[in-house]
Every structure is written in C-alpha cells, then in structure tokens.
Length: 461
Image (cartoon, rainbow, N blue to C red; front, side):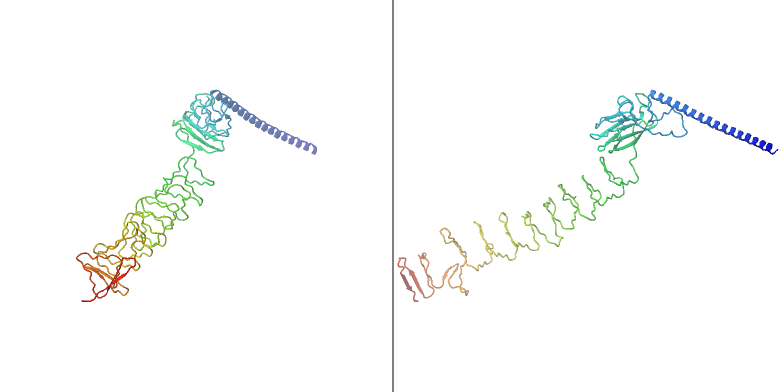
C-alpha cells in the first residue's frame, strides 16, 4: 500500500513537470516567432530603403548629403547620419576639390557647373596652394538636387561646408555680396534657403558679446572699427606698433613712460593751438619757426646756444645787458649803422677806422670835448705818408703845470711864448708886423752850410 501511494504521487509530479515544460516551450516558440517577425520587418524596411536609394540615384538625388522631402514623415526632425564624402572632380565626389588658382573657383550651383555636373554642398581646397584663393558660390537659392545633371532644385534650408587644407594661404568664400575668410587649416559651415531667393550664404555671426583671445589676434584684411563703442580701449603692457596714420579725435594723454619718435624719418607736426613742453628739450637736427613768435619772456632761466653760428636776422632788443665772453664781435658785413646808448662806451683794445672812413665826434657847433691821454701821431715818417691838421678855432698848448707857455692862437693872431727858433724861411706878409712883446733875442740861422747864427738884441726904446 505505501508503495502504491508513492507511485501515485510520482505520476502526479511527472504530469506537472510535463505541463510546465510544455508551457515553457510554447513561450519560447512565441518569442522566436516575434523575433522572426521583427527581422522580417527590418529586412522589408531595408529592401524598401535600397529601392528608394536606387530610385534616387537614377533621378539624380544627392544621397548622403540631404534628406528627400518625399520620404516618410516623422513626428520630429529627421535623424542626422554620419556623412563621409569622397573628394574629387567627378560624379562620385561628395566634396568638390578646388583648383590651385587665385580666382577661377567660381560655381553657379543652380546649374551643372562642376565639371558639367551638379555641384555638391562641400568644397575643399588642395592640401597645398600656391597663393590665396577665392571661392565664389552663386545661385544657391536654386541649388540643383542630386548627382549628375538632374534639374530638380532644393527647397527649404540646407547647409554647405567649406574646408581650407592649406597650411599657409587663406581661402575666401563669397556669394558675391558677403564673404568669409578661412585661415589656413580651417573650415566653416554656411546655410542657404530657397524661400528668400536671395542667393546669400549665411555664415556664423561675427558679433559676440564678449571675446577673449588667449593666444594672439591677427587681422589680415579689412578695418578694425570700434567707432560705435562708448567703452574704453586698453592694451597690455607689451609694445604696441601703429604702422599707419593715427588720428586722435579727442586728445591723447601719456601718463607715464617715454614718447619716442627717434626711429621715425617722418615729420612731427602740431595744430594751431598752444603746445606746452614742460621738460627739457634737446634738438639734434635743428628747429625751424616759419611764422609766429619765439617768446621766452615768461621764463626765468637762461637761453644758451651751441658753438655753431647764430644768425639773428631781425631786430634784437636786450633789456638787461649783452656780454660777449670770447670770440669776435664782427659787423663788417653789415651796411647799417652801429649806435650805442647814452651811457659810456669803453674800448679796451685798439680801435681802427679803416680805409677812407672818418671819425667824427659830435656835430657841428655842439661837439663835446675829446681828451687823448697818449701821444698823437698824424701821418707817417715815410714818403707819401704825411698828413695835415686843420684847426678851425684856437690852438693852445700847455705844459704839465697847465701853464699856457708855448703857443696859443686866437681868432686875431698867434702868440709865441718862450724861445722861438726859425730853421727856415719866414715871411711876414705885406701889411703885417712881427712884434716882440718883451725883451729878448731873435736868433736867425744862416742858410749857408756853416750855419752861422746872427743874433739881434731887442732893446726897449
């Protein structure tokens, strides 16, 4: 009995296990069926895609760059896929290779102008350019769709890629109205739309709120214009080179350091306003004033020139003396007069009146006295050097004691006082007398060679 009971329980367990196994197998078969159905759907979708691709290629669609608007609609934006383009100049090129020329890379993408084929949306330079090149894209609002020569045009908005692979030269992209300069080893994206019909390429914005450049800034062309800004312009502590003309519309202030134009060969010119030079000024190459005044009247310092010649071509007024410490005072080249003030004039060295020039003291009827403390010689001792003295007025000769004891003259005659020797002919003209005022002796020397003297004694009557 116990054995039979055990057998019944075993059979029940076996039946339960069989049922469980059957259910598990059924579930597995259902999963496999679902997997097979999913694979079938994927294969069906792939086949449809391949058929669409083939149809697109036969129609000239640019597969791999744009999506076909006729494809199945999505609830959101179509997914983007990784694109890889071949480079070349034939129908298999997804990125058009530009020629090594400065200006010949010009394409009307609304026509089959890429080697008689429709142009792709990618353009790339050679790896080595001989010069900078310009790429011109026109007609982008009606860009032809697809590879080949199909005439279907794009609609909506689409993008372009421009790549410069050269390591030295720039690549300029233009639509005829605007342009973008690609530096060496750089790329840029641009967009065009069909709705506007403007055929304009829309590049990334050139306006930024704040720009920080960590490793240099180079402007290779165009203008650097901050005229619309009300902010300040500040540089670093390094050297600044301004290679062109500089115009300061509202003043220029140098708060420290030097203003050095010594390396310049050009001119330095100020306006018509006042110029203040507050420190010492050194002129290495001369100073020229073409008009106006040179006025140092407000200065309490000295005015000193170099050892070179100084030319004062106009009138010179000295309010506080003039001192010549060395050298010559030479006015010989002047035809003008030399006039002193009313004060005394001292000549410490010899004074010569050269040539036929005269020396006059005073004016007629009002001359002052002239005193000569040294000997006076008139004429020379050699033949032809004799000179005359004309005296209009009295002639008086004094001894050292101021006694007029030798010769004096007046308007009515000549007085001789003392011994008179006549060593030559003496004639008293007719009607005149020779009077001896006092007792004395007249000595007459004979003209013969023995020079015998004859004495006449005058005795009072």
